[in-house]
Image (cartoon, rainbow, N blue to C red):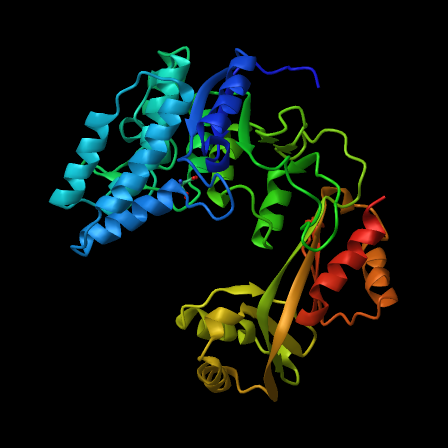
Length: 442
Ligand code: ASP
């Protein structure tokens, strides 16, 4: 594909930076195009499947020090990861002072967030040095309020100003700072969020997110062998698929680029010539022939089934049921309803040990004629912007399941026509996904 972008933010995930060898691949990618101006690194990830991510080692070293246990061995392991990278890159960078600071903080007592963030910090120092780019400590440009909520607008103002003064820079992922200056991290996998924040502040025309897969696949490859890749997906479709369990990108990474209308390109550091997946705003979607974009699903759901004669005329029935659920601090997932029936789909884990309580409370609130909790429910979501206005898609989904003798326990289609969700028995989950995929994968 011809390169039409001039101002890119590139984020590299942990596996892309796990060793000197991997970092050299990232460096070649960055240097391959002048447009790759701002780099957001994660901490070094796993080099092989039984390896430990540096962030996990940092959490371990923090826990050891906080419990008053010896932590030297873990600390040495962490230091050795970085020293190995520096050696492998042939750099004359001396990290002694940086490592000493972290060691002192551990000895004196510091926060978990500070320690966990050092994985990205040190990787950022190394990459900036190697590339000859400016190093910008994320704590100086990414802000949280006292309660730990991300301050999007303040961050955008300060970071934009700072970036406008640099031709190139490395900004470590995963953390920022609280009003008192202390380091605060995002949730795990949060470097994706930093990349999106930097993309917005840099007014980038593309946010490249480099990882170890060539974008999203239409369906989980553990369920369907060698599924087709997704070339283009909208932010909304991605949200639907991630909610249903497809994960490559941190969920909160969408918002900053969505408000700025910046597309994301998921790319593979080990196969840089693969196109990967483009995540784009609605309406700007490139050509895309398929009706459906992807299929995902979730197991472990439960369904509360309620029946009451003339329910449809009883004002406030649904409200009272949902109030019970809210009062118990549970969020509901779906709400399919009939004339005199109402179902609430909940996560099985949320209901664990509380089934009798919820039934009791609903009974007291609305006195249904019949009520039951059904378990072993799995949901399969068929997602695709191509479905809107295309007659026959639901029919094809249902036929595909009927042919395989799979019973549909529940159906839900949002009015956006972006997805069709079907509920099947958990033991038919994989089978249902394979059947639907076979129907639509041309
Ligand atoms: N290093 C952090 C983690 O392992 C953040 C990230 O990699 O995105 O969760």
